[in-house]
Every structure is written in C-alpha cells, then in structure tokens.
Amino acid sequence: MSQSNVVKIRPLTPADREEWEVLWRDYLDFYQSELDPAQFDYTFQRLSQNDYPDMFGYVAEYQGKLVGLVNCINHDHGWHMRQVVYLQDLFVDDSARKLGIGQKLIEAVYDYADQNNKANVYWTTKTSNHTARKLYDRIGTQTEFIKYQR
Image 1: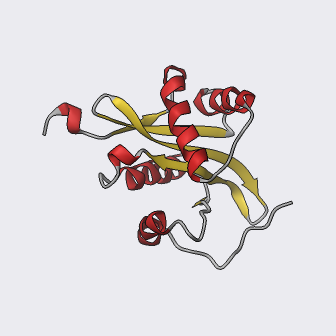
Image 2: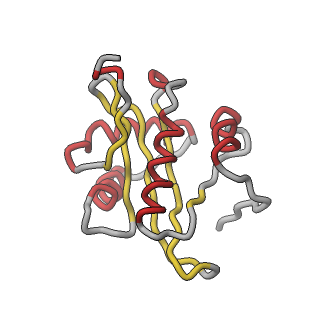
C-alpha cells in the first residue's frame, strides 16, 4: 500500500487551522448548527495547544489532506475520582467514509484516556444518526440516559 493511501491519526496542531475549520463547519452543517465565527478561533486554540489540558483534538490524514476530526474535553466527574473524557465532536468527510476513520479516531481517544489515567470516555449523538450508531454500537456501550439542556 502506498504511503498516500495510509490513514494517519495524530494530535491536532496549530498548523491544521484551515483544514480543521472546513471539517468542523461540515460537522456543524450535518447537525444544522451555526456558531459565531469567533467561536472557531476560541475552540481551535484550546484544542490545539498542548498547554491547555482541558481540551484536545485529533485529526485523520488521508492522501495528503485532513479528512476527519475528533474534539474532546477532559473534566472532573462526581462519580469518579479521576477525570473523564467527553468526546464532543467526531466527523469524517464524505470522501473518506468506509475507511474505518471514525473508529480509528475513537480508538485514539480511548488510547489517550488509558495513557492519561482517565476513568472513561463518553459521547452523545442524535438518535437519527443511524450510520454513526452502527459504529458506536460496535465499539461502545449505549446507556439508558437521555440528554436534556436549557
């Protein structure tokens, strides 16, 4: 297999800003959401800086471009003595679907959690996101909790 056909999962870096934004905008479009442009800079800066331990991100590279992202938040939890990881955003570009990238990104977060002594990893998705849920049902455990918000 040529090097250009290998999927590489790696930490998000400041140099990834433009390609990350394209992916994150597509992710937000999928969820029919819009954010203030200032939020992009604010979130990216926190995700891509090694000295900000509360958030981190990984990206997937394929054929010389970024095709996937995962954005995560570390936080304390009232039921665990160790922090947990909230996998907030996961997205793979349509051009790179069916290559196992979503699973590779989640596994990178699992590895991060194991290496950094986190209690667990969790995430949410829309009940109608059937394609993603096929993956999630294989590599995670669905809980009985329903999310509410103000």
